[in-house]
Image 1 (cartoon, rainbow, N blue to C red):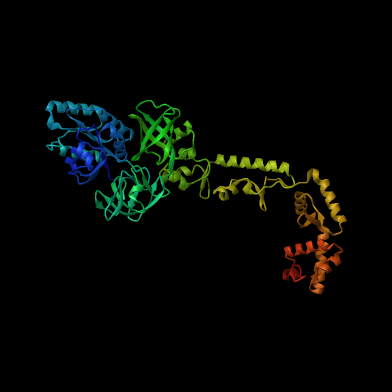
Image 2: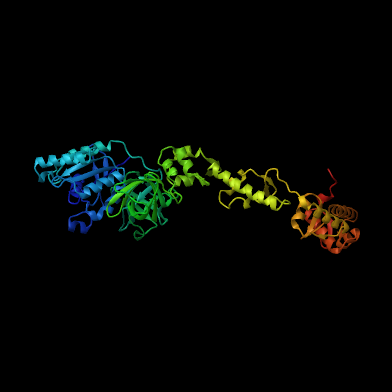
Length: 581
């Protein structure tokens, strides 16, 4: 994996001079930097190592006013080059820069004791001893950018630390935080940054977040050299189509579409340089940008950062918290958490077991793609963790959540059965929210399906105390001698029809089952004898009202027994077939 080394140290301790001596490139590109003789913004250069490998170097400003620029550069580095003036020793920004490096999890590097030619050997030895005490894990080397003394030893030391364990990319999907955006004549919009993860090549369709701008990569360069694809860890320049330079700024994230969430909250594990009280408002430095936030403390080291603007983040990302000075930082545990801080959940998320992590974050239905986009786990770990929760189609959810949904639905069906014993069922859509997961998860609820409705297992429609009312209605139908009778209670009418005790023939009207069968038989006999039947003939055959005859004929049409031809009805072909033919 390509590596990036970042400078750190107090102003005027010789960072830029040292980078120029090591690489041959002046990283102070702004006129103001050259006029004032100090670094203001980030600078970049390639560094050739003795073994033929190449490091990307980010040179950062050392002035206390530009610490935010230093953090922007440091968030994408793998190794540090801490610079300490041999005459001055460690100064305030030396300590603050070193604290920032530690908060960002950058543990490997080299300390360069600069301007060794300007002091005597005893002072150099004292400066080296101080450097070793300041950073015991790093090798300290005296150098002179002016004479070149110690530069070969420094290159060799950087090559040694570059051989050590490498940080794994946080996720496989492409992610780059913009540190520069500019326009080149004849080329167009160009952005630069360290590719945190994934690869990027010409033709890739990407998003600029948090504004959701769609862009296409025209070409890719690494240190001014064209490449087919850039890899994670490299300093990259992307020529983008579909966006003007003025629409881009430092801190924007260029990412693979759908691969990362927009985070308005971050669940984090804190590392404090100074006590951070609940409700403190600070700047969260993440990627190459920063955003105001309020710290909501939990128990122990856990907290939630409520952001004033969204960021693109992933589990495991490091960040720095600053007020007037750097007060702390930490690690992202969940980039898309619910509102509210649950210390037990955060304690699980701080661990490394994929199963417990997935169980802690999966409650309501979520797709595997959405979980992957939250950047919580690498694909293989996520797949292992998802095996511990329940699945329906593309959706994953906690078994407890499904039980709660089932309990709420049971309660509604029980209320329905008590309130309406004649029709104790409900459409499933009334029991399950109209969510995208409903078609796949709704059928998992343990109900009995009857037609378009679901019922509690074993629960059937019943008349109960309304039997007497049903008998009165049946008596009225019998007395009507085949004429349609108004049924005031539609629910009772539906129940009696399902029970075969009446037949509904119109809007709120019904006839007795016996009258319906008698009318059907008379209709079939007449049509088989005469070939057709009129409304008047049908009415006279049954001795009923014209309205009732019309309703019955329309009912037979709807049942597929007859079809209308002008003012007459004829039997449909299927109805003319003898039974069991």
